[in-house]
Figure 1 (cartoon, rainbow over the protein chains, first blue to last red):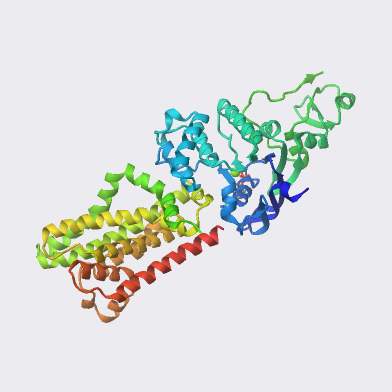
Figure 2: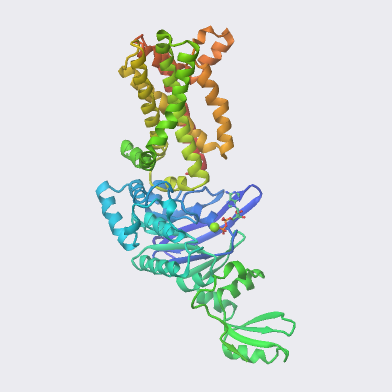
Length: 305
Length: 245
Ligand SMILES: Nc1ncnc2c1ncn2[C@@H]1O[C@H](COP(=O)(O)OP(=O)(O)O)[C@@H](O)[C@H]1O
Ligand SMILES: [Mg+2]
């Protein structure tokens, strides 16, 4: 891949906290204009990776280049290129929405005049107008997230890092956020998004990296990743409730394989999803944490015999 | 190159808004301590001796510059670091390290200066011996800056509120009483006087007292304040560079 195409390039990142290796030899290459999803369960090392990529934490080993700039030597320039939405709300809770926006705009070196103009613009985009004079402390989670996002995109960053932006949001806010992320990406912003929602990685992202225990265990488009395991899953549930899953390249071979299942089992064939990929690669099911709280459009079992 | 004053203002803007929202609380908490000192020592112990009041008020101003400077910056940074991760936002912005450090001193500086001027105004009403001189204002500013820098360093290093409170009671509280603020350092036994003269607040007090009483200011004390301020600044710089880029 040509170097100028690469927006985020990390090589051999390691971060230790005492004895714990939170990120363990991670390498990444995110291209210009890509919407990259970083999928993994809680504690996998997503936040630590984002903090290193965004100059908030120094890696113990490895190197990072953002748009070709070394993140260590050219840190102020790198910070100008990026926008970051942290996992936890990092707004100043004692200030109003307007003051938070203005403070961020000023710290991004915008002039007072330009800052005021953009605040109006982004208040419109994010529908914040009625809440501009409200203290952030008094806002609900969804509104706080909107304000954080407005704060981090006001300087029109080329790369936007979002650490679990939709965790804890209701379906409506999440859909709105997805629309916004797609829009920003379409306008040319490279997006690096972490999530533990499989469905989000699958339906939103161009390319997905799966991280587990600080290591990148797979990377590719959602289609590639699923094809690697087998596009169709044959699920059989025995009379004792024991579930077993096998993967097949197409639905015909899955149907053929269903002949071998013991006769008193119930069988279903469904498209493979990224949860299956994760399960196959790690042998670990993390359904409870990795699934979204039953969101609309989730591909459920397609056929039963 | 970059515009340092502009960046300092940009960094400080959040704290300035915070002060505006909490103007009354900030002023009250800045003034209560110094007023109690004035009442207890000026009137309680010396029953309103005018010379002593003129003597002790610069000391009280020095104490309040130290307290306001240290506590504003240390507490705000600790809270922003530990509980709101909004200090990260500061680090994430393309501001240069000197701007971040000095920007975080602005609130302490303003608080200390406002408190000091109010106490001085009160003192001038109570006794004719005190005057507001340019040296005094400069000394207040320098002293606030020095202790704000110490506060930034403490806020960046402490890992909990109890730790910060401990630093406060080990470092700040003893200085309030010992550094010539309420009595003459040279009346202490020799070895104690040496220790006390090594502490920064002794020199803030000396400069403020001399300038408020229109006596000649000892340049050594000014130099000591500058050396301490530079040292505290360097510590902040090292902490930020070591923890972050
Ligand atoms: N500041 C820290 N000190 C000690 N351990 C940490 C720190 N930050 C993260 N960790 C540990 O590193 C691992 C990865 O954490 P994190 O990157 O937050 O994961 P994720 O964002 O994927 O949930 C976890 O085991 C976490 O407990
Ligand atoms: Mg996380």
